[in-house]
Amino acid sequence: MNQYKFESGFNVKKFIIVIAVVLLVVYGFFNARNLIKGPQVEIFNPIADMETEENILIVKGVAKNVTSISLNERPININPDGMFEEKLLLSPGSNIIEIKASDRFKKSIQKSLKVYYKQNATTTTETNL
Image (cartoon, rainbow, N blue to C red; front, side, top):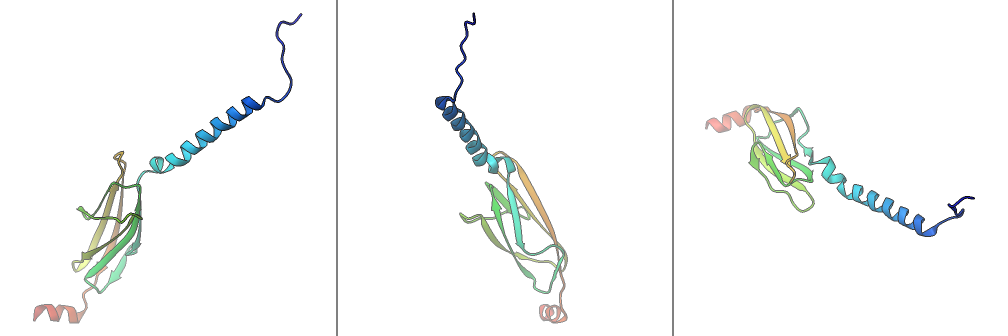
């Protein structure tokens, strides 16, 4: 004689508990995805290895999951949507633009771009006057 009786059939209570736990775990991972990814920075302007004849360059981009961000070691502000826009004075020749960002867990990211400022003849004569 068998002391254990197994009921065959579908147990709705256990099914609901299992589904609730699975949904809770999936929801937790979905909300933690930004923490797992760390800080993200995308630069819209300028593009890498760009040449320009303007000595003032506007650096534009978006930053996500950051608590601090800097442009060439100078802190910059971002709006609530994560967008940033900063003016940068270029030196003649090659310029390195470096953006560093970090999140609250001290994960960091660094992006570097090279921009070449080519002075035209009228700019040099105007500055010599």
